[in-house]
Length: 152
Length: 297
Ligand code: SF4
Image (tube, rainbow over all chains, first blue to last red; front, side):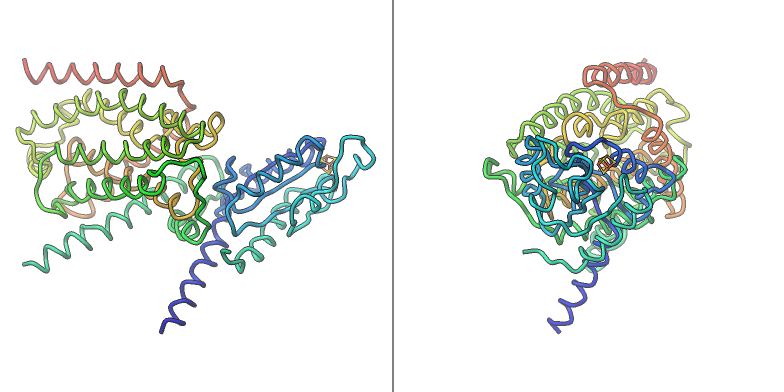
């Protein structure tokens, strides 16, 4: 009986998770190309709200961190802090070549490593910049991961 | 008899119905707002999914937060839900008959508890948001109370259910006193923090206002409080100004019409500055006073 109750609750919560991702967008210092494509995801044409997603500018309320741009020396501690402020369970998506592998800023003096040296990254969306469709697909992939991730 | 009372307090038109309807209203609001912006929009039951999801998230309590951080959201939710139980829904009051003032006190206390939750989380953003909220309260309580007094004097009773029945027999109060109804509608928008009155949670200025620090189930409680507030105010509007309701059908269409108007305001308007909010609300308070003078003289 108890087992069954747990299972039903689990299924309910994971369904609700799949249907309600709240997103934090953070530009860590790229060329802003990815940010523009990311904003397109929120516009009527691509409309992330049809999957229940809302863009929240607050790490305390977010479930999915969408991070683009190369990690500069200045942003690195702040990025770490934003990651720690986000409540578990959470998913991190690296958007664009900069966040994945420093991209065109590869040998710049002020760049401090790709994103996955700062925080664990779950989904990579390649491209310079990736298309809005690609970002949307990344979010949907992340949802699949997030659905089965439990609170610590 | 006893079973009937309990059922009416808990199921219909009681707690379950109220919670269900408040989910429906905010889902309707989000869907209609999306359609107005040419988007597909979330499904109608999206707010329910949000709340379930938030229940399953981590509850963070900041180190600097005061003791009230843990219980104010709960108190806010409970007192707003109680206010909902004291409002007539489709011609019957879930929790038995009581006068307007109890209802008003529960409503004000619930709102205040929300802002106290902001104060107790010790984040500069939430404190600023809470201060703004309290200032805004000074603004909108005046037109709200004035418009309710007009309705009370017109119907000659302080019991919401009698005002409801008065309107059913004698026509809409908002038709004979349109200015008071206008003042009421403005204060409704301000009370549920619908644009142009979303000053306390201004997303572009102060992260999320007074509930910046909240996560998990407490955030779910705060969101529930917002939705319940929308429901309670819409049903107060129906009872006091928009013709009352005896059947579920008239209750539904009137409330959805009011929610639709509120959505229109949400989509069309930009945010006001806090001092403008104060001035704007007080102007509508004085507009409501004209109707009060008409009734008294
Ligand atoms: S990946 Fe390309 S488009 Fe995106 S921020 Fe870097 S340089 Fe700009």
